[in-house]
Image (cartoon, rainbow, N blue to C red; front, top):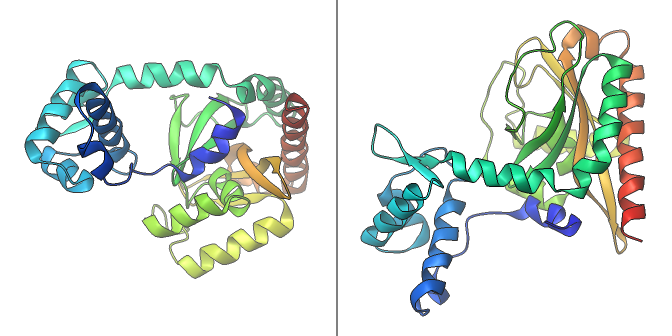
Length: 277
């Protein structure tokens, strides 16, 4: 995966209708359908053959065969309900790709310094469709930081500070989030599209995003964008964020947290720019 792919990943969606694929023969057609089937699971955790067939415009028998083939290879797994979800083999391959990202290599020492400075959990997130994928997470020692155990995890685009700060500087991701709609996770989750647009506008002005208990009660976060220049545009390709208890992150030391996170993101952005020279 190249650095340019990080920008493109914000616009990943289900592969378009398969009219060109239907005219192909043999292995190429099978590979195209397999990729399209996997793409369906970007927006839904579990799917059955009927839904996949409808999404891709193929026969249900074709969808059944492809789902079964992907499950036999570990890319998907079948649930007790007879539907399918992403399998561990796909997760393992994804981890290998993540581990090889230049972005992660450049950001890791910066995350370590940020974690040590603030004693809060520091994270690196990249856009995946209308969500973010946390590709690195260093747990802090502050109270209330140990609230999850998974290193790699997708976060919803509308309720996390990392996603908001990327979407504010990445129109493709913002469009995907608005098209998918909003799910209320706590009483503080933004669910009004107009309000969300206003927040993104403010984030662009401020240079950082905050999420106050929008995803988990008692936990809040602050994020700043990792950006690259694309011609005359500056596009966010990732985000650095700090997450912890609301009182510690958004309390008396909020200004210090914001400054530290912005400085960390700027450091990684500069390193990325140098790597492109």
